[in-house]
Length: 157
Image 1 (cartoon, one colour):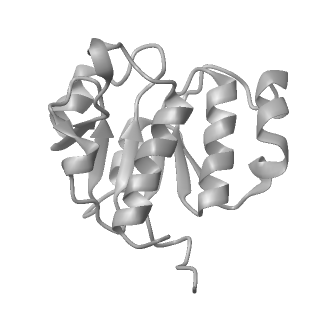
Image 2 (image 1 turned 60 degrees about the vertical axis):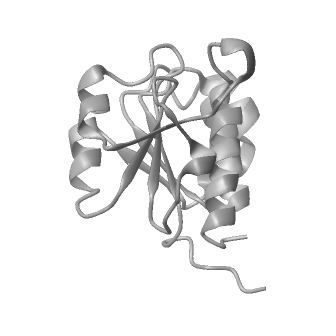
């Protein structure tokens, strides 16, 4: 099986992540599954944080990570590209959505999600259905679940 270029395919974007271990685990997941990762700053931790370094290992050296200084900078880089917001406030399940090759799947901060203004800007909002109205999954787990579905649908694996 031939592997598609990393420039194509889904991208994961993290809005102002605030838990270093989650971000590090997501960096590893994206590297191992061949997805690009975009981090919208500011982060709630330093990349020199020992908790971050312990989980990220040498995956921080991967070429699939891009940093944006602000949400506005991120948004400008997405002209004519589709952004899909994962949120517990959505009504559509990620499994009922048709992912496309160049989607950017945006995840909010662990502590607060994304601000209401961003909810209003993004047309495609999805959720991961959960049993018994649980509050939320761990961010790294949620990224892995949705990324796998996106990769499956777009035939990247």
